[in-house]
Image 1 (cartoon, rainbow, N blue to C red):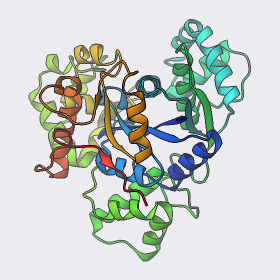
Image 2: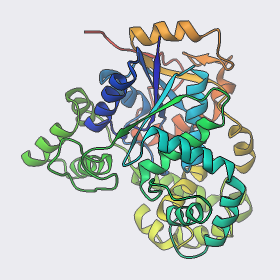
Image 3: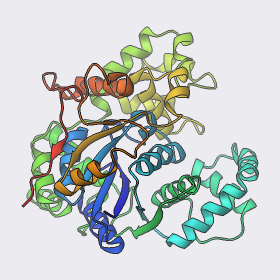
Length: 403
C-alpha cells in the first residue's frame, strides 16, 4: 500500500486542510493518508482549541486514514524540532511521500535547498550568530544568515509554511531513505489573517478568533455563522459548536500559581528558561490582570509573544531541561489516535517492521513510554472540565465509520 504523510495541528481542521489531503492523495496516488498531529499543546505554545481526540475525529472524517500523535516534547517547538519529531514518526510508519502546504516552492527547490543547507550547516549557524541581535525577528535573521552563505534561491524563509516545509525537507534529507516530497500550494487567506475573509479557505487563526468570541458573548451573527459554516466541513462545524473551547486564558490561574510558588532556582530548571527571564516573570506575575496583559508586560525583542507562550507551556507542564535532554532524542512510541479500514490494514502491514512500539491503548505496562504526554493531557483537562473522561488511559483509537 502506498502511503503519504502529513504533519499537522488542525487547530481547528478547516477546508484548506481538507483540500491538502485531497490534493496530496490525488497527486501521489496514495492508498493511505497518514497524519502526524500535535496533541493538546501546539507549536506556537498554545493549547489546542479542542482536544486531540476531537481533532483526530475531524481529520478522519475528512480524508485521513491514520492519525498518530506528535509527542508534546516536539509539538511545542520551533520548526526544526517540530519537524524532527514529525518526520521521525513518518519514517517509522514506512511512509513513502511527505506532503506539506506551502506559499511557494516546488519539491525540487525544497530538496535542493535542504541539501545545500545541510552541506553548509555550520557556516549558516555561524552567520546566524552574527545577525542574532540585530533587532529582527527569528525568521528575518535566519533568512539573512542563509542568504549570506547559500547561492540565490526562490524560497521565502519569512513565510510560515515555507519555513516548516524547509524544516521537513532538511530533516527528511538526514535519513538514508528519505521520503519523496509533495508540496501543495496554499490557497485563500494568509496564515496570520485574524478576520474571516470572502473565501472558502480561511486561516485557522481567524476561525479560532471567531469561535472564541462567540463562546465569550454567547451569540453569533448569521453572517459570521455562515462564514464559519463555509470555512469548515459540516461535521467539523458540529463538533466545534458543541465543544468547550480552550485558549490560554483558561490556564492563566494555573500558570500564575506555578510562577508564584516556584523559586527562581526552580524556574531556572525549566527548559528554555535562560538569560535571567525568571526574574522578570516573578516580577510581573502578580501585577498582570490576565494572560494577555502578562505577556505584554514580560515580552522583549528577544522574548517574543510566541517564545514566551512556549516557555509558559514548559512551566505549566513542568518540562525541565533534564526531561528535554532525554525526550528530544526521538519519539519513544507511535500513539495511534484513530484509523479507517485502510489505515487499520496498513498498520497490520507495517507492525513487524517498526523499531518503536505502536500504542493503541495506554495502560500500566506501557505508560512510561508516554509519561510526559499523559501529564499534559491531565493538565489540559483542568481547562476543559472533562475530569471524568481521561485524555489517555483507557482510550481506544477512533474508528472511521465507512460510508
